[in-house]
Amino acid sequence: MNESYRLGEQSIIAYLQRLANGISTAELDVAALPAELRAVGEQLQKTHAILQQERRLLESNAYIDPLTNLGNRGGLDRHVEQLWHKGDPFTCAYIDIDHLKHCNDRFGHAEGNRYILSICRTLSETMEHDEMLFRIGGDEFVLISLSANETELEQRLERVRAGLIEASSSGKAPMIASFSFGCSRVDPLAGDTRRQMTMDADRKMYRYKLMHRVQQPKDNDAPQRPIVDQLPCNDRVFQAISMSSETRYPFILNLDTGESQWSVNAVRDFDLPSQHPFNSVDMWLARVHPEDRDNVRSELDMVVNGSWHFHYMQYRVMDATGTYVLCDCTGYRLDGTDTEPNMYVGIIINRSLADTTDSVTGLGDVHALVNAIGEMRRVPHEAGFITIKIDDIAKVNARFGFDAGDRVLAESAACLMECSRGKGRLFRSTGPTFVALFDDLKPKAINEIADEIERFLGSPVLIGSLEYQPPIRVATLHLDAVDRQPVSILNELKALLKEAPQVPGTKLD
Image (tube, rainbow, N blue to C red; front, side, top):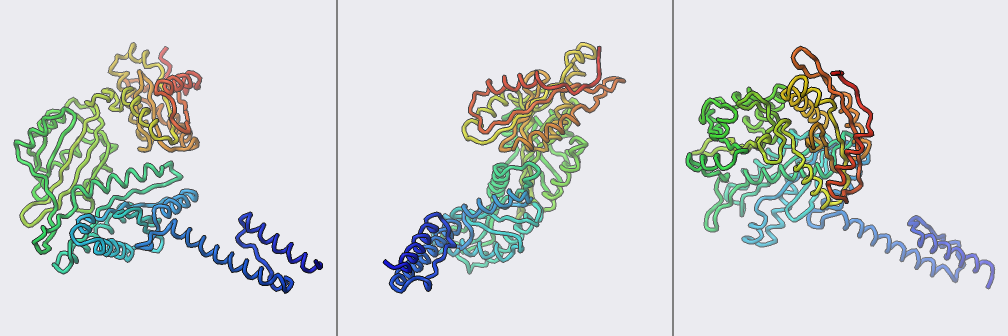
């Protein structure tokens, strides 16, 4: 064997070794090989090129939906991962095509595919340069926008949906085309989580679908103007519903006339003027806590003027005793027809009366906390805990009475709500101890919230003529996964509090 042939063999072996080590850019200089090895080198290069092409095709198929040529669920996960790594805030919209099964069953899957592609094309035509659309399921899409905020994206999708419905209601299309959606704005650097984003957008989308999905014409009917499902209700049915729970208050508001109907329990518990008051939005806003009022007014205004079709907020409302109680408020706008008015229908849950709610603070009690920790054990993910103890409550009770102590706890709970910025679930564990529970939040973000609690929780509370600043202790716990019984975690939090330094406040000795 001559030296040239041996060197040629070594070049081929080195080339194959680089390929085996995953170096896809490895090259082989075929022209430099001896004549008897050039055919082998050329064949190796052709084989490598074919394998590279197949690999790129496989990668493409892993992230691309074959019908729409959009990114699939894997593509969405990769894109969101990149945004999260950069820390870029963005808005996502979960979009669900209405009545795709009806289309497939009645007109066949070929027409169903055309329906999907028409929705895809319509959405794509309205997208901005920094937006991406993904198809993550048969009738499910996700739109990611870097520039649009939640309200802007909702308004745009409302316009797109209205245009689809109008264009397909003329009788030429086989069925009325529409979709439902829910939007959520997330900021990774502010501590938002992907799970929180998904749950928020998905929940809003299903609420929207429940209240606004159009009815399709029956088999023998020509397409007509879409009809929005209305909730049948009369006084007897409404009263039966309104008296079925002490903690839930249904209501109906006629947006055209201002007349409303409230449950008998709501009239009693919130001291409303009657069951059928006028100007009920202003009436209700007057009972909302001043610190929450502007945000509530802003959301309700968008529902009333038709910008939003759903509303969900948790805020404080003054009850008949003059005490602010924590309420979950959910409402839906029902668009009117030629014969029916625009309506706003909803339900209010009084958390202060719920079985697992602490009556003083309106937060979940220790039973609710144990249940929440138990739920987190079922799906492994990161969990963060911040535990807070208000010291000297016993001294406040002894010197000023239990009402004063309850006021200190209630003010502390309100401050906790503000510091947690809605990212955590808050509970009054036992006595003067609180626990904030966070899903999928990194230790750094947990510590930043804990630092904010230390700075602001000790705000003075006026007790008679005394400005009392409660001394507090704050401790944190981060778990990669909740793999223990709730009691074990609560005992560890208790031990951490004992070791935590006290943030001093007013001395009562």
